[in-house]
Image (cartoon, rainbow, N blue to C red; front, top):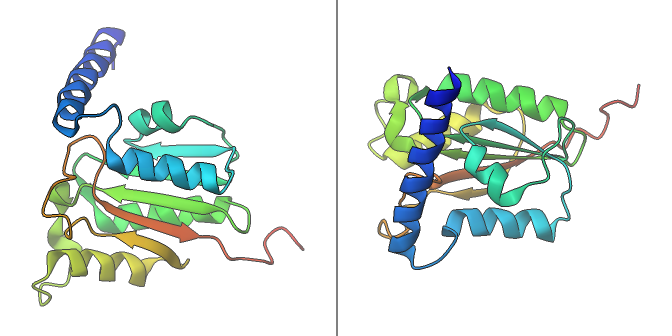
Length: 172
């Protein structure tokens, strides 16, 4: 990607963010604020960013290659099995107690991997992700309980928090 198209992408993103923030009547979308609160409450200082998470990096900060937390956003078309694979790899890299935050735009998901028998799309996503992760989910938000009030194209509503509970890592 050349510098001109990268600059244009950033300008487009800032215009979209500005427009969507007008809808909220504030300077931060609720999902960003909740994530920032989580990071501050847990005193997380080093965060690795993966996927489409540039805007969250600008909001939350604390970027580091060796993080206590990994933030992974998917706001472009994706396959769920690939996302879960990346999540497991990122959690493997984290020290015990490390947190992975995953936010998915479920409308851009290739549904091929989901259980076709389950008519509840949100439940099918949750079941697939949790059953293929090697680490436990400690918090989950489907985004369906608010009647779409939080929907935006900036920060996805389907959100998971996972923890690396491997207490034996790096102890050999």
